Amino acid sequence: MRTQNCGLCIRQNRFVPDVLIELPDGCGVVRRDDGQILVTRDVSGDQGRALRDGDRYLPVKEWLDADHGLVGGLLPAGAVRVEVVDDLGGRTLASVGEGAYVAIVEHPNHWHDPVVCCRDAAGRPVRRPLPDYVRAPVLDAAEPCPACGLLDYEECVPTERWRAGRPGPDGETIPQPIVVCRVCGHEQAEGSILRISSPDDGDEQARAQRIAQWRADRRVQRWYENKLTLRAVTFPIYAADGWPAQMSGSGSRGDDLTELRIAHFDTEDAEVFEERPRIEVITSTAEPHRDALGLARLKLEEWVRDEIDHPRPPEQSDAAFTLWLRAIDRRQRAAALTATRADAEITIDAVAHTFLTLTTPSGRWVAVRHEDGLTLTIAARGVSPAVLRISSIPDLAARLLGPEPDQPQQASA
Image (cartoon, rainbow, N blue to C red; front, side, top):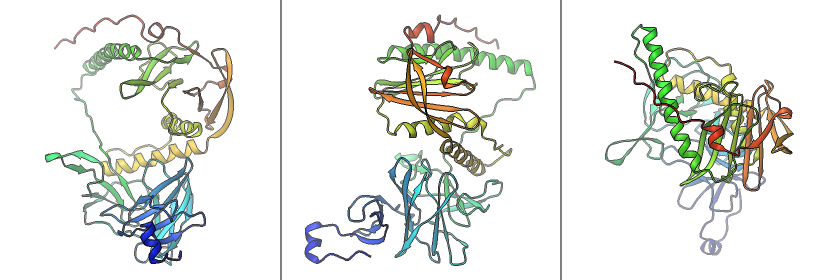
């Protein structure tokens, strides 16, 4: 415990934290004068991540840098040991004291809530206290809990206003359900799940015609959307030489276009939203919120999704489907984190440039370079960086639009 300051110091500094647990580098958990508990990188300050109102035993995370996070919270009754699980499934023992715990964790589940398992003196999981939610058992779950490793879930309907949800009557927010482990209390947000079904009229020919009509309509719509997007381009756009190219997405900040994505397929008529490209080149002027390594990992997570071998059981409930999705997320992050890092030379406008590159054992790779306010991200499969040639596109409309399409014929009734 840190020595408490005298009354004079309290009046001068206004804020004197009650330090519950402190790590050697000054990170820890503190209780403010108003009773609020913070997980903070500096126990002598007044900044940090506060425990959630209404769910005080839910662990929270404070970022330290691109690869490390500070995870902390309150100990449930009976717990004497806390394990914090990282993106690779590794377990870090937290420091415990004064009813709280804290740990610095590498690769700490960057898109989701921390994965924490509290245990008693015998090593058994201790469930964190939960608010009085409406709950129901999940009977078709197939994914073990990433915190305690057991398979016993319930679906809960939370009531806290801070939880993301959907708009309700009178401007209120209706929280989305959460899936909670009944053994240790680890929760996973369910989010919005949309199930789409198509009419099954038994006529395969009619179904094929409907699909063909939809694709034709979508091509026309996409051509005009892309034409408007290209009008907003104010920076050079790059693509791979000698490959069919299609626009696969864009990004903007306010009214300004800041990113354009070019997908390369083996054939000119590939369906950009149905097929996986062989190469993707992203040109961006937006100030990156992550360094080159962080950007490469995020892109690689997306790039390896279709090769994650984790079949989904049929006819799952929304809760069980959520658990399956989160398991896929963890495998994608693990693939990106364990990819081989290296510097590779890629030819840009006939000049070799050095890119930070991540490569998976299957040969999929992502390369990132940031220079002079421009970020180039290149992802590929089955193509070596050494043979790839990237160039700025001199005539965007000619390369990416082609002739204006004919309006498709409306399907007959």
